[in-house]
Length: 443
Image 1 (cartoon, one colour):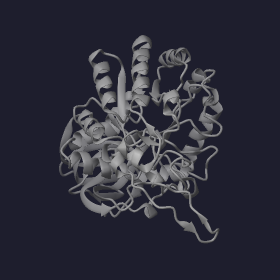
Image 2 (cartoon, helix red, strand yellow):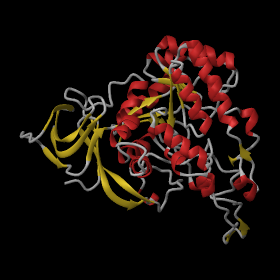
Image 3 (cartoon, one colour):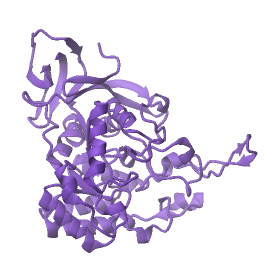
Image 4 (tube, helix red, strand yellow):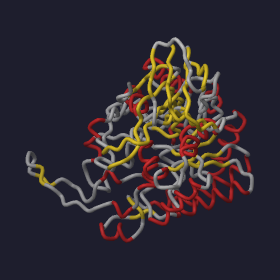
C-alpha cells in the first residue's frame, strides 16, 4: 500500500522539521518527505492547510476490558483513539481481573492485535489485585511487553512496598506511572475543596491530597533511579515539585489532562433533582457528575500554573485519562457517581484551542507533548515520522471550527463535560502502520 500525503505542514519534533511538504508512505514505512514528490501510489491525500504529525500517544487510557465491557471494550476504545488521532495507547490495569500477571497482559495485547485498529500497550499493576499488600509479577509482565507499572485509580500507600516495586521496575527497564492521592486525606471528597464545594454542600478534596504523594514519589524516584511519570497532575504545587525534581536531575516526567487545563471548579453547577415519571421518584442529583473526576477540577490559579508548566516544558505530556462510564453510572449524585470522563476524541481539539490558540504552546510543542515525549518516556520507537520510521501519522486541521457532539463518539462512554463546547482544530485522518484507520472528510 502506497499513500502520498500532499502539501501538509509536516511537524516532526524528532528532527525539528516544520515546513510544508509531501509525505510518501510505502508498505507501512515513511519512505520520503519533500516538496513536489511524484510517485505511483494507491491513494493521494490532500492535506493543504493541515498539520501532518506523528500519531498521538496516550499514556493514560482506561479500556475497561476485561471485566467492565459495558463501559468500553478494546474495540470501541481503539476506535475512539483513532478518531482522536491516537495511534498508540497505554491501557491502565484497574480492570477485572486486575492486570497483575502475564496472562492478563497477553489477553489484552492479543485482543488488540485482533481488533487491529491502533497499537495497545497494557500497563501492569504494582500490587496484586491493586490491594497494596503484595507486589504483582512485575518481571513476568515485563517479559511479555508492559511498558510500565501503575496502581492507577489508587496509590500504594505502603512506601516501602512501593519502593520495592520501583526497584523491580528499574531492573526491568520500565517506568512507573504514579497516581498521587493520599487516601487518608480524601475524606469522601468529590470535588475541589473551595467555596464552590461549600455552596453545593459537597465534601472537598484538598490540593495536599495530591501534593504529599507527589513529593513522596519524587523522593523515591531519587533513591531508586526509576523513571517516574506523574499522572493527571492538577495543582500549582505539583508543577513546582516537578520543576524542583528536574533541577535536581531526578528522572521525573509529568502529564496534564485537557480537563485540568481547560476547566475549573467554577464550572461545576448545581442542578435541581428531577422527577423520574416512570418510577415516580426523585432522581438523586445535586450537580452535573460529568464534572466529577479524580483529581478534581481545581482553581483558576492551579489551571494557570498547569498551562505555564506546559509552556515552559516542565510538564512533559498531555494525556487523556480516558475513563468511560455508562449513563446509569453517572446519572446520580456527585457522592455516588464514579470519578472520570472520556477524553480520547476531544483531547486534540481542546489542546489546540486552549493552548495553541491560547498562546501557550507552539504546534511543535503540541506534537512533542502528545506524541514525541510519551514515546521517549516509555522507550518506544515511535513519535517520529522521519524517513525509515513506521508511518503512524495524524492529519490535523487547525482551521476547522465545530461544536463537540458526544452522540458522535465512537467510545461507549458519553460522559463528558465538553458536549456542545465550541473548539478549533479537528483530526482529519489517522494512519497506523501506513493504513488509514480513521478519516473524516479528507479527499
